[in-house]
Every structure is written in structure tokens, then in C-alpha cells.
Image (cartoon, rainbow, N blue to C red; front, side, top):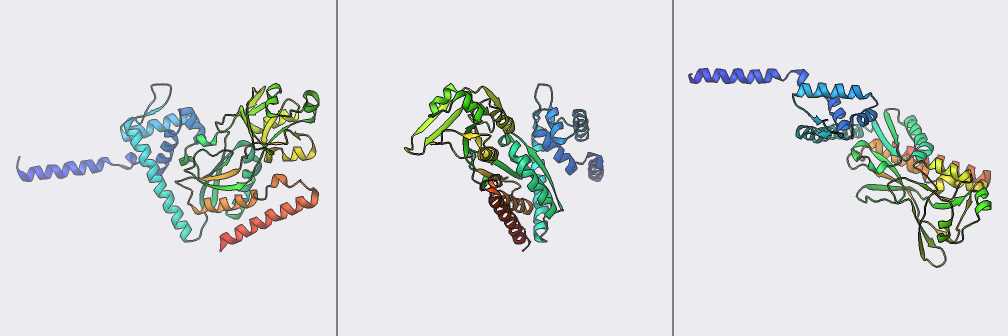
Length: 355
């Protein structure tokens, strides 16, 4: 075969390889987002929940993607999904590409002063329902070009930071590498119903809790049966390992059990302040303090710099800094004052954002 013939053959082979890259073999951004969700799930059923579709739909879309690429991306032979080497490569590349696209969109939007895009927020169950959800609704009213999703979880810290832009966290912060902003102070308060105190008596020292019926809230992977106290007078510490009669991962359920007279709880002030004010719950061990559980916002290292995230953080801070759960304390006049302060803070935040 002569040099000319070989050259013609190489050109033909090159043209054939280019022709093989038809649109059906290309990967779309929708494919990348789909596979990112799939790679972060523990099973196809878990991926279906994250994507809000049925498991068969996830299976079919994965099969189509693998057929287009001509390779297996996930090993489904065992009980858990395992990414193949090619699947690992695609997942890493997909995250980087989607991050770059999102950052580019955010940068262009910021340059023209537009607050737009999709905001992803994660928050604890009870606090998220009562305070974060209304804040998102208010934010949408101010910035209609922003769409938003709110995920409520009793263990938000387990969720990878590529799944959220802002996370609301209550309690001890273990990962100090995340950028955080304190939203509001929040005390932990030991309390029970008057009916329980009348039936079982009031503990005078933390160690007496061992002979009482205690109720524990399981959240944030904390050691929930170790209750820690510090004396207001002497500064001495007392740690008590309780044996809970009831446990739940939902703070509202734990609170309602206490209201029903079923035991003693250690709950956040934001959740029990109103019931303490009305007398449906009474504080216990007033001479002792429990560790504070401040309410903080964590910013995703990947997506937290977007203008929409910063604007929402400002709004949420303005709404929670006034501690609206204390608005009932001091009567109607104090309540009106708290609400007015919150409204002024929000107005100033929005006005400042528009400058």
C-alpha cells in the first residue's frame, strides 16, 4: 500500500470516528444532573426519591445512558449500588462541569444585578416547617426569578454539600471547615408538664433524672442520652446518662409527649417558649444550665457564593435574629414590638440588597 493510499485511509478512518459521535451519543446537562443524583444515592429507590420519580424510571434512564455510552456506569449486582471506574470518572467530571456552568450563570447574573437561579435549602424538620418555609415564600415574593427547594431532615449533616446551597443547623457544630453565620441564640431548656411534676415530683439535681421518665430526641447523630449540665452558682458540671422511656426523631412528637405528661424533655427554646409562657410546660432545674444550641446557617463551599444564596441568608438572618418565638413574652405590646422590629429588619435588608 502506497503512502498516498495510507493517507487516504487515515482520513477515512478519522471521518468515520467523527461520524460516530452522533447527537445520540452526546451527554446533556440533564444527564449529568441525573447521574450526580444517582451517584449520591445508596440505591435506585433512594435515587428515585431524590429525583421525585419512580424506581423503574430511574432504571430505564440509567440503562439508556449506559447504552449510549457503551459502558456500564454502576454495578448493581450486590445489595448496594457501586460505581464502576467509568462511573466514578463520570460522577467527578459531572460535578465539576455542573459547578462551572452554575458558577458562570451566577457570575453573569451578578454582573447585571439579577437575583435568579435555583436555591436549595436544607433545614431541621420542625424549625424548617415553622420558620424556614415561610422565609422562602417571602423570598420568592421579593425575587420572583428564583426557584427554590426545601429539604427537611432530622440528620441534615449527612447530606453531601453538593446537594444544597444553604443548610440551617441547630446545636453543636462538628465540621468547623464549613462557612457559618449565627442566625439567632437558642437555649436548651429542661421542662415537663405540670401534670407530670404533680405526679412524679420535681428533680432538684441532675442525678435525680435517673429516677424520672425522660424523653429523648434523636437528631444530628448526637449522643442524645447524655444530658450535660453546668451549675449557675458554682460552675460545676454534671453529666447524666438518661434511660429514655420514649424516643423520636421528630421534635414536635417529643414536645407533644411532654405536653401530655409522659415525661421530661430537653428542648430548644424556639420550640417550647410559647408553652412555657402559657404554663403548659414548666422549667426544671433552674439552678443549672444546659449547652446552648444556637441556630446557624452553613454555606456550601461549592454553591454558597451565589447572589441568591447571599440574599436569602440576609433575609433569613433578619427574620430569625428577632427570635420570633419569644414574641409572646411580655404581652401584646412586646409582641407588636418584636414583629415591627422584624419587619423593619427585613425592609432594610431588601433595601440594602437593591443598592
